[in-house]
Length: 291
Length: 345
Ligand SMILES: Nc1ncnc2c1ncn2[C@@H]1O[C@H](COP(=O)(O)OP(=O)(O)OP(=O)(O)O)[C@@H](O)[C@H]1O
Ligand SMILES: [Mg+2]
Image (cartoon, rainbow over all chains, first blue to last red):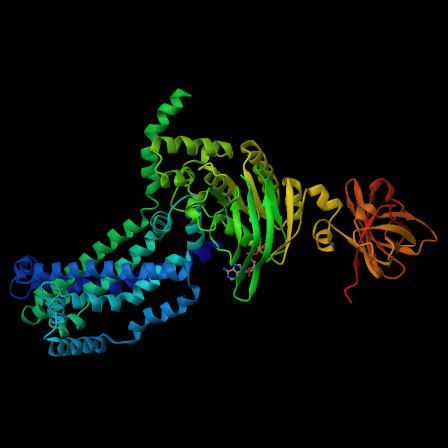
């Protein structure tokens, strides 16, 4: 009986796995096939080699990664202190924080970008005689558009908030802080040495979600007239179909690779024991031989 | 090191957590803070640790007001009610955390952590993470961590409440042994009166943010100064009596001297411990045994008097054989001063 149910569960598992796999893998396989099997040429990797030489690939990818890094720093820099403060000092602010961080979910990015471009157009007109004019120019610098970082930060707030909040739920921040303080740690050191190390997984999740969002973001970048990676892909797709699909496949792989890196970093708590033991082992040996 | 609370007041919104607490813990003593839930024990302890600031009043350490000293500069080790070890550090690293904050070298840190883990009986657990240890082991490590900086005061906030009964008894004896060995002034919060009576040098009973009585366990048990203390510590019977106003009270047909409030007169409750009540089998007795519970050397009888009052009496088990449930009995009290409380209404 038990074996029967077991087998049935396994059968179901296989079926679900297969359907899910087909759903994801078939389009992927078709994409790959489309890029390597060019009509009239047979099997060729030319679209992939073409990527590296295509104009704008490296610059747009680098720009996007830089934007992502800046966004991650800004989002975590804003959210972590706010969430910790809400937990430690003002628990009543928590619902407010949650609502504020969820607002971007209800504002479509098109509306967001309409607002941004409105301000960007209005600002210079009215501020042309003030030093703020330079700020508006700098914010829109095409080599590093700060305005995109600001937009992405707002857009990734809901994702990062949820990831961090889940992590904070799993630890008793107040007790950890107080335990650290009674061990002689100043409040700042207590945060960095007792609280944040226990939020590593949550920080990694928040960073990854932000990164994924920035990598795939098209609307804001395109409408404000910048050329991050996603915009570049769409742009090149019009002229060279094979190339653009090849780029999509590559960016998918790139995202996966980054995901794995982040997941590994987030999980490295399980790796600490090995490291700690490796470090402790040489010290232990002489002690043992001495006793 | 002497610790003194001087008329501490603290309110959280409308709740008065502390309402004029005065209390002193002497050098090297283990002072238990005992009281019902919500009476302000934790709040008092957290004020000593520096996590809470008094609305008014002072916390004095060796005569000096430490109200303005931040928590991390106070020389106090603390063990928390909830498990509070740093999850990302091993037992040894947890113990050495404070030393790392004080910038003690790695070798010395490791040596001191090993020494402390030895002290709490967990030398073989140095490389374990908190989630790999039992609750009792975690609290031991927490105790070692609290002692690592050789604090002048040790603060324990119900460190045993999350543990099962056997581990609790074991660990509280160990805490007592360590405390005496190190001669460290210790404030131990608990709401378990047995724990307080069996480990502390002195027990401070709190009620609604105020000190009710602070005395040695024996004194607290034998001569409680208020009815609240009498009923909170140990079991108490309440017998209806009539105070005469000249220092005696009539109860159970006897006339006994009154302890304390001698000028009270009229209907009162007489408070007596079960072990002070004697019951004997008596065919003509008006009282009736309604239940018996065997406790080894003594048997606790529940006796209902003629007027319906229930009395608990502890009598030697060898005499309890003819006092089964349903038996008629006579209840008497020894000729000793008793505590009385006037009826509220
Ligand atoms: N941070 C706080 N905010 C609001 N009220 C609080 C806070 N801390 C304590 N209180 C209130 O103050 C009172 C005393 O709390 P305290 O924690 O000192 O009680 P306690 O004697 O330790 O109780 P227990 O035995 O349940 O731990 C309680 O009524 C509690 O609700
Ligand atoms: Mg408490």
